[in-house]
Image 1 (cartoon, each protein chain N blue to C red):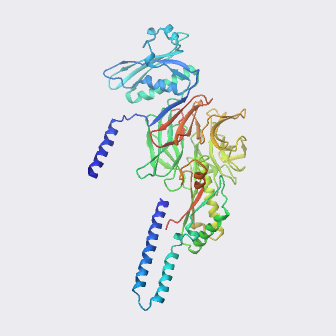
Image 2 (cartoon, each protein chain N blue to C red):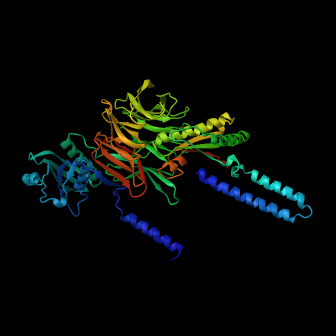
Image 3 (tube, rainbow over the protein chains, first blue to last red):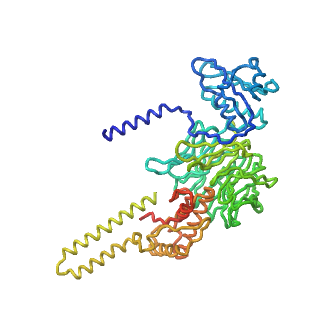
Length: 441
Length: 172
């Protein structure tokens, strides 16, 4: 076979693979590794479908997967369901009690005119024999997946009292090899279950530190596209990109203030890495730190009046806290971490009461939680090189980057450490995760 | 990328050197009665051919373009001082030349702290060079942290190779 013919066959194979693949297929696949053994048993019964042809999306599969991933629920297998009621008068509570279910979700999806659907669901408490919550919606086909995540959030909140974080995005960086064996970096966002990946930026040079704006509409990140690390901001909807820094040295660690008007960052333009705050309107810089060490990786407290950051001013990297105002740093930095050889890369919980950090214990880098009131440190993971920890917007889960079988993966873990799952790519590494805030639309 | 071009250019220089010496040998053979003196001249030309590529000459410190560091350290090892000083002397003597000091770190720790660490290492090399009289405008520093490892392993041997500063001449 001539070279030309081999090439043509190769191209045809690739094209056929592309047409077979569904546009919403997950790029990230999920492995559930740990699960609470007293997880709440819930039967999410497939919704009744009224419409022509196949139903547009098995919403209950998305909902079950969400609830299972939280580690707090044990969804019943559809194959084990003896009854499949669709309205509350069809529900036989006694038989659900026999199946040891605590909750049942029932619902309907009906096709309306012009490509839209009506969806309703009810969450029922088996023991009490009553409805906990119920809602009705209208949506287009494109909106159904997101609506499924929203329903998961409503179910989660009705049962646990805590807001869910299923209708959120993840941002992350993937690294694969191109045909010449060179690294290809991509900045991407996806739904919280890894579906609907969108590539925002691609480069042959490294990308690090994606950071969500508080309104969830923009991503800041660091890119080596110009040859040295600079900070950029991209609007995730219109893809408009602006460069925030132009300074010599390394421009790193973009961190949005809670009001979205300022960006903390680490710049080495004045000799060594120091923390600055940039006013995003005027682009004026206000200096926060002034030390001989490296000051880097700032994160804001929810009131916008102080920062935590990593500094090796004491010899090894540790976490410090510093008050800030409109003009920059106020007073002296206060050291927060005293356990362990090194502590780095702090993120603050949504309620400001805890920070999560990278903690060096015996040469292994693990994710830990520091309770700021009690000063208790708890180590959550057991990898050798875990990093980039951050909270989900409900504060109940953390995401971080780890290693599995020699490849970079993302991992989500409940803040008590008892439930976890991993997100990995088919090929290549995924790293640098950032969990979006709650969506505001 | 600078590293790949560097290797390609070294290859070209090496082949240039080989071509040079074969031409002089031919003219040496073609000589006749002037063999003795022309031989000396030809040997001197051979020598000049090699000396004009000091970066290529393994006995010349300028051919060393990587220096290595201890864990979490930006201290220059005593055995590396001579190498850096040789590069500094070259740059002082060739004030039109520019050098890029590319700092790196091993994978341990966090990505951004490692970029800062790589930069500190490159700055240590820069400082030694400027003390030797090199103008700051000749030196550019950039750090890739752990993003460009030379060795893809998760052990001491890989880590040792990755904690480095590379001395790169964009014009070579």
